[in-house]
Amino acid sequence: MAEQMLSDITEGCRLPVLRRNQQNEEEWPLAEILGIKEQNGRKQYYVHYVDFNKRLDEWVMYERLNVRRMQIPRKDAKTPTKNGSGSCSRPGSPDREMVVCPRPFLHNPSSQNGGSRRPLVSTVGRKRKALSMPMDEDSQDSSDSVPAVPLPRQTGSLVCDKSHDDIVTRMKNIECIELGRHRLKPWYFSPYPQELTSLPVLYLCEFCLKYFKSLKCLQRHMHKCSLRHPPGNEIYRKNHISFFEIDGRKNKNYSQNLCLLAKCFLDHKTLYYDTDPFLFYIMTTYDCKGFHIVGYFSKEKESTEDYNVACILTLPPYQRKGYGTLLIEFSYELSKVEIKTGTPEKPLSDLGLLSYRSYWSQTILEILIDLKSENGDRPQVTINEISEMTSIKKEDVISTLQHLSLINYYKGQYILNLSQEIIEGHQKAMAKRELRIDSKCLHFSPKDWSKRGKW
Ligand code: ACO
Ligand code: ZN
Image (cartoon, rainbow, N blue to C red; front, side):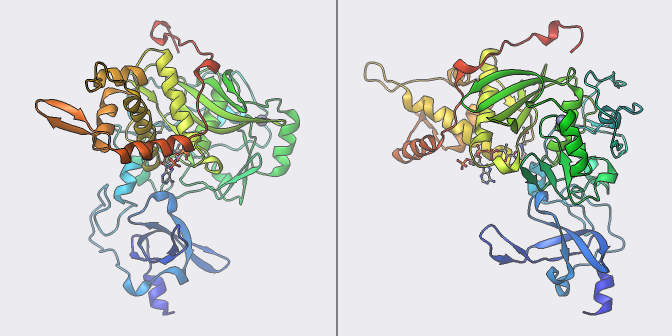
């Protein structure tokens, strides 16, 4: 290896990097060097694959770099644009633009540790009061206390993704999280205390989500922690699945710890310091040891834009098993009880869009296929009726029908053509969908938050 070559590799360089795809085949996609570190006398390079989602970013050794095809950033290169143009860019694949989930927040170090109170740092996209944090109701022990990483306060519009320009936040910082019987590999940065980022494993109490630097500390905590389910009210139970409703104001510690964990898998653009305006719906599976968190979604207590979900997440060990669809179905069941239509907060992540499209398609097709004709005429239904029956916002109904290429304009009216292929595809998908929400098991009465002086 030429010494010169090695020292030429700097942040901002782009070059093909060896990786294995989902089929376990070798490929050499173009990647950008975002960071360099030395471990045991050997250099490692943090790479972002240009056309791939940021969750695939990783540390690699020199052997995986094709330095012969390296593009070195021009010295006069301008500050990169958001979509990654400019030779010395931050991760900027088009994909990345989609995978931005709203609703993040930075942790208030004191809330876990009972130490001095600092306001949560935020990259607030819309104006909220700059609150100083009230005392938490569920004070926790202060042993093993570690302050959360202080990030610069940022402001900006909802689409402004400034936190990613920050050198601290653009690389994943947690190697591994142990949560109950699972080990999770984070996809994105999360503002856990800096001291904890160098650990091989971060230990979380799977019930209160408090974090610890060692297994010993966690075990000590487990003797004291009496929780065996998320705090809040259990508002749904069927078989082994339960949902708990958590008020971000009443259960601040839990909500903040949940957001810290969720941030590992949600590539946010906005960081909220304040969980008060949100409700959190935690989905769990039950066994003799307790109610284990599978996923959650958050929801604004009041939304002027009809959002019925702010952030939604299935923890990686449970993904692709139908739980995401179940969370989505549950969010619409809540909207049905509220007699409202709703939509997830935009923009959706790539996986969020796939999951919502799949849910919307199945739900709308179910209605269309079940339509009965009267007097031998073609069955009729309006977009409004579909929207009212499903609580799916009108715009999402229309976009789904368009996505499925079902709408045709014929002789002055819109006709929906359901091909046999579509019907069969739908029946196959529904047969696979074993987990369903049973509205009879939901015990939920919506609150009118606008009538309350304070959330
Ligand atoms: N690749 C391809 N299709 C996928 C994938 C994937 N990795 N993940 C989900 N889908 C699609 C599929 O059509 C799938 O149905 P199928 O398995 O029958 O083909 C459908 O989405 C739903 O799959 P589920 O198993 O029900 O969903 P899952 O439990 O995996 O959860 C979720 C989906 C919540 C989006 C999960 O991937 C996740 O937590 N991702 C990280 C966080 C995130 O991106 N959240 C959404 C942000 S947008 C927002 O918060 C409003
Ligand atoms: Zn605990």
